[in-house]
Amino acid sequence: MNYSDIVIDHFESPRNVAGPCSADALNGRAGSRAAGTLVEFCLEVDKGVIGHAGFRAWGCPHTIAVASWLTEQLPGKHVDEVQSLDLDHIAAQLGLPTEKWHCVLTAEDALRDATRRSLG
Image (cartoon, rainbow, N blue to C red; front, side, top):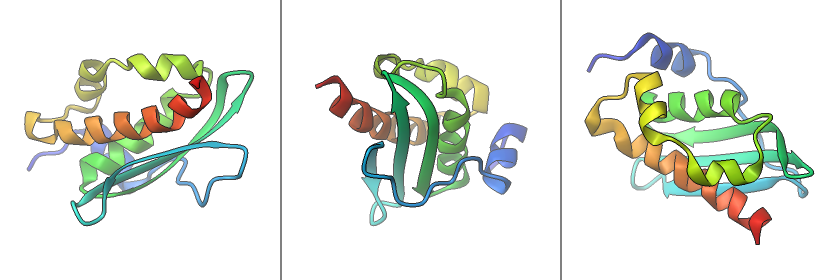
């Protein structure tokens, strides 16, 4: 499989890899190790705005790259913006092939899991 430069970069040097989330952070999870793709996000939020995003992920290089790339895009966004991510834009930015769209969908599910708790 061919990997885009951005996927290679984020897979080889992932950004914002997180340990366990602090009690006051928003955390969300989607997928499973058994299924081969798991993404967890830890979001530090102040007054509804994401200040820092961390992740842990298991899966293929595309999964790791999507999660890492997203942690760089999220700071400064309001948590309600996460509910309407442009998945086509994310896939295009990372050069994801169609058969790897599940990586974006799993990351989206994990982010929505985290932010839905803050939205009530």
